[in-house]
Image 1 (cartoon, helix red, strand yellow):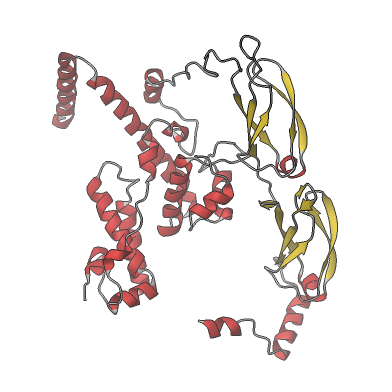
Image 2: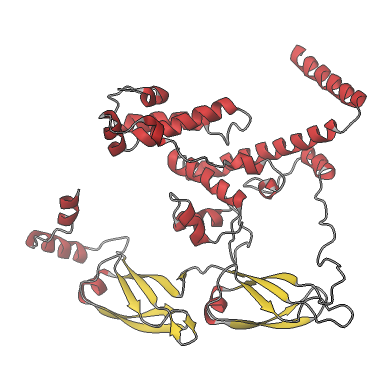
Length: 309
Length: 114
């Protein structure tokens, strides 16, 4: 049997999974290409180490490799772009400040003078002699709820004109709205171009969007899960009362029909993912209750799990 | 390339939405739209891969990540400046290039000799 992957990681064939993991971690810390951007040797070594760990770090793959069912060669990861390949290029300045931005040195001031950003040249439409005016592109950031429900926004264009934009409900991030005739004026009496507005949709702290459905995680108490309850649930169009059936488990998803994003006559649903939350400090009553239940029940939620593994 | 949170999480298998939001809120990754509508480009995605390596594969504790990122960011800034400087130097007449190289060697030697 080929033992190359074991040699690469510097472990014996009888090493435990834990030993393999430790060996990999130790090597990765010294060989990672983003920590050694100018050292192709280390980069190649890191790739070999990662490939070996992909194989041996997975008990099933390791077993099949040891049994000769698969060879080491098929295990290489697809070519990956490393951070340093972008960060040292032009355009990588965004992260120059480091994590703790603010303490610049004299040294970098010199470079700031030398390599100050060039202003983008020209800017805007090509001055071609066409009858129709050029299309102008804009960016517009809209709130999560504005995008979900639709909204009207008045936007001031760079030339000082203000236009009203109707944001249709259910607009998605990156979608482009075309406003006819709101672009650059035409030449020689030709029609004006269009304004093309690329929409960026903000995220929301509790709602997550999946197409026209809205997902929300709802924390409930232990007694609500056991006995069932009626609770108020926020939706994009206000709070609604939802019935939690008795015996609801964490992770279970309840559907509020038609409470998602409306698009014409159709509308998405809101999916409510239940999460049972216990208080940080368990009081005596709860403990007694749990002990009494434990001593009287034969319920085991993991029987299925054991059978399948 | 501009990707939203869902796409990024789908693209980087080992990244969860929770981690992504945490890292953005910590300022470790700074996507284009600021706090309102995060849009991630290649640079951000590559940085997220690096963070997955640091946090998951190497299991570095979260409180050292800012230090590590600061060092890495300084390294790349310096490399980029060095590259620009080298490119600028390449465009100079031969005698200027030779003079600069000689001067650099002299300084390096002076330092080495103490």
